[in-house]
Length: 422
Ligand code: GCU
Image (cartoon, rainbow, N blue to C red; front, top):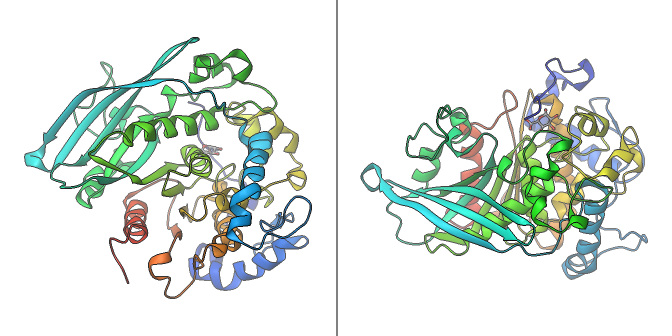
């Protein structure tokens, strides 16, 4: 995997101290930015340049969208195609047949935990490839359980010390354990389902295309190319294939699947959730540039930064916007809007200037008018009731996904699924 984050953030990327505080962001910063960003140049309270962003309720020809039906029809499809063409690349519609082999299904810990390990095999005329799916679920559930489905970045054995999780010899277990508080999630009545992103597209560099699952597709449907899919779109495709399996498993409730990801995998979760309406809830944790953060706000990681260091993540066309964010025909608030009327949670961390927490929050706010078409209350609605579908939090601390983030996501999922009410 390429190196993670530059060690020393540039001074201009740090959030000024007062802006690290969420109520400040809400009360002072964002209401101003929200109206300003839809018109001309938006000057944010932290002095960062934000180019004007497209109004999500205007069609490309400038005509307004007034109803949910107008949004869900042509406008949604047109926008999705624009994101494919300019940023993530086109995902082929060719189906690759998949089979699932349940290699293990055991109940452990005196009935508290059920562990399933499933090998997904993909076969096409071009070749064969596998992905290993790990499911950890409550052992004593009486009905189908809701799921958090997310990719991991080191192998399934990195999420836990559990010696029963299949691992190649000599691999260190539990390296990312802090990011996957499985006991907590399972105790709350949810299953965790995870696969390694490298099974779908090795997260190395531009040379990795031939080792990715793209090799199962006809040659003209593989990247790299101007509008061919990159690693993020391939990971998102993998998440949808995992959902295909989950939907066939009676243990699990495929109508209540949250697709979740941290950082680069948060970008993949967002793109998966935007494309595949079967995901009831989409969670982008510290997803930053190419994820929930506005690209037209020039803060933290820029389009040039990300294209230079991770040229395999996006399609070739995205590079045309290096240092030219103002020219981008879309921005990430519209990606979030593609999830409406389903639920979306964006999580930021106060010291994660590289991911631009304020830009993440702004994108969510700027998507609200689309959710409003469906009667979904705004983030700040005092009594959102059972229609709450938007969540944002700013966790104090660094770039990571930790127990407090998961606690917030589980609580939000509980609300979305009507498991708790005000
Ligand atoms: C780098 C990259 C980010 C990404 C992050 C991660 O910092 O620049 O865009 O989100 O790695 O995945 O941890």
